[in-house]
Image (cartoon, rainbow, N blue to C red; front, side, top):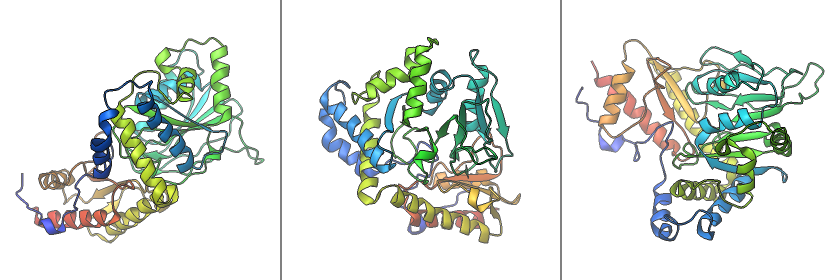
Length: 376
């Protein structure tokens, strides 16, 4: 490895830029040390843990500005588990899926493999772009992805509409794992807005969280009454019942819950989603502005309005070995800038979650330039 030493005075003070798990704030960890002794290692069905779950549910309802009749539901497993949960408990017969990267394809695969569902409609687009949903009377669930973590493409969430302007009747299920907390949205345009906490919410993984509309809750109840077999760990009705009691069906990762509650409280104290999304907006301006002015770097996503404000993907000319740049950065304590492994491009992937100060993005680009100038 090339021995390039980046001067400490130009390095970001925190070198973690991973797309997930993301950096966890030192203040949150300190709060855990200060107050976690009566929390960690205790029953998840008792007050200390239930109070934290209540903080999460109430804090998220406020942060996401949910309508009064939407509910926050949570359970164990992460977004991967939720794709299976949705396949069992939210799709009645047939779904439509927008596929434009590795993660948006996984839900489509789950629906395709389910023997009790009709083959889904899959609308794909080239990597670095996103397709649009199409209203279809044969579809009862539309699977959208607000931010494709593998490619750095974001899309606005809207209910599909027919040519005459009427809204499609199917549920809108929005995967927001890397978007929630860093990108604005209108919750009324979705029926299930689901995510895991290890991105913008600066926590560890192991949980899924879903903001559910009354229509989504009704769908869950309807499928339950149909007597479709659903494994208990994937049963959304059981998760809903437990969430209403401020607990999860199985013992959750308590540290994850605590860190999540701390991040939500911080966001709400600073100004809510508008504040946190504005932080990511500024970071995106700095990263993409640098790449557009660079002689060797280019934003991977061509359309500016489709470039993610939480996950930036930057391509490099053939004369620059991005993998070597990432290695040198890591050697200097700047970590997790490698591209998504299956995308196979000569690029860096950089998180811009609201827990990252925009000034640190500027410091990172300075360090990238410094390294490139010194690599042969």
